[in-house]
Length: 310
Ligand SMILES: Nc1nc2c(ncn2[C@@H]2O[C@H](COP(=O)(O)OP(=O)(O)OP(=O)(O)O)[C@@H](O)[C@H]2O)c(=O)[nH]1
Ligand SMILES: [Mg+2]
Image (cartoon, rainbow, N blue to C red):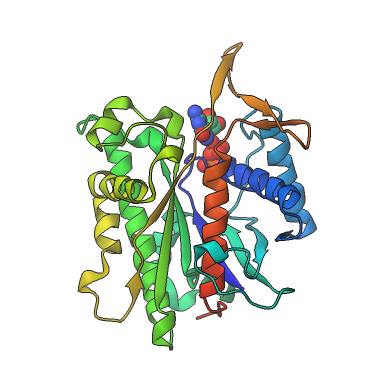
């Protein structure tokens, strides 16, 4: 089993993201019950269900999670061969390729500090840091079109923290004995895209239409420009061209998440739609983005060796 590590700064939309990822998994579990597996311990399920319930009733998550004290993890997988269209070779029909998604055991501000004390790290933290797949959240609200905006200061801080988190992860993965396993896959999620300023979209030369309609290359290219302009240190950190330690860093993939919202009696609510054919309601969220993230993780699970503590 491989592991993927979700990284989110405070307020970046982490809890909402986790809830939507779970919402999409519930749907995949119904739509593709023979091909898709989901597993989590009882306590994690309880917490995921609570967030799922809130989003499904049109509210942003309220009782906040202390991910750091109580990291959450769940496992999902596709039947081997299910992702053939993505270039896999079919395997035995009873086998599943699984990936463990680890949430929030490692807030970015902590990670930056860990770098200075890596000799003292416990086994769990070392395991986290050996994840080959990293899912950082980028908050679209922080991407102000005005370069002199006060928000730029906190953005610069977020950039520095993310860059040092990657530096730390790179150090761990580069220390792998086997050269072919020294590879890092960044999968960025831009959260709150419904609140992206038009001017920011223009500055970043966004294609027309909503992100889920953009072509594969346009999605990556937009992400590349966003990193270069708003997260320059992180962009430099992920540019592996000058590395000498044999670590390969894949070009980042980008996923775009936003919710339709409405103000009801001064409260920001999540718009909902009916969840046909299963019945009930679900938030108006971009299911295809989440499906594509889940499938990308499944494809990587097939390619990656099992993670061992470094
Ligand atoms: N418009 C819009 N707002 C969002 C979206 N996701 C999150 N938000 C807003 O951001 C707030 C914080 O979202 P959370 O998911 O709780 O973010 P978090 O990173 O878990 O926040 P903390 O736990 O407080 O660090 C929510 O209450 C919403 O107001 C989105 O997709 N669209
Ligand atoms: Mg939260």
